[in-house]
Length: 384
Image (cartoon, rainbow, N blue to C red):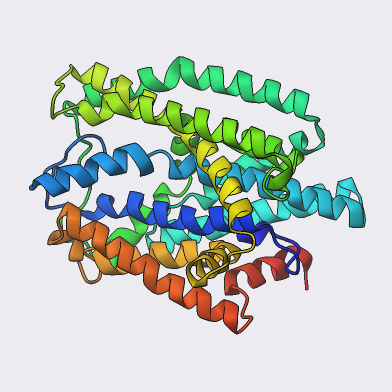
């Protein structure tokens, strides 16, 4: 995330566009988790009540679900390489690794506070742990990193679809129930959230291809593909086309379930596993697409692009802000809008939230105000 950036003067446009856009996808993927009064649809989706609801669910499963998470992981791995390179030049490899370990531990702490105290959906703990596990790979060459990507991806392919097949068989339904009743209070749920803190990242690492996604980010970082995208146009086009094609094809079985295809529960869960695995390719395709966009937009920076890049520079701050706002607006512990929203209105809420916070990011950029959490992270890591 942007807290992993060490240089503020010369930024990578493609990287900031990707980070800012990623935050919008994350909002859209997390909001359905609070629509607890609507019948479950397929996995985390709720059933649509209108044709337009069904269309939006279709778009979410094709474009957003299980695609935002691997994009996040890829950008995280890319950021680790940037820090390691910069700090190695300044202070040596040993000190660079020490600083990265400190960042990862503080990311875990931030994520624990977000999940346990604020009640948000955490991914900070997950990627902080991934950084600690993969820190030794930062000194490896790309030949070895690609080998690790292949091995870790094959391992995920061998068990993730079967795991999710078993989950749906155990669940006895296509849809996973939302664990909200409308009677929750902040005080009544905080203990449960605190207890779940160590479970959340463990579950995510087991059930999603986090490690290969972070490794792919390291590979991309080693070749500077988003820092100097103009030098990698052919590769960016290939990765974008191949990654997004695999992502689209892999999403089709899940999209068909419960509308035109009614498989048994294990097959439905297996299809969700395929959706997850091909979303890994989708995250790579998105990263490459944003690289191409950065080249095209380099000399045409309008207000909207400036706002998105401003949010990308402050992605840690705005990720946490979005999660907290989602809980406040939709959760029963606060305004409880999740009880009355439909699929369509919930997505509209997400769009409005992103646009409002995008405006805040733009104003911060115009006034040269850094993200407060980015500043605090730098203070903690560098003891400044």
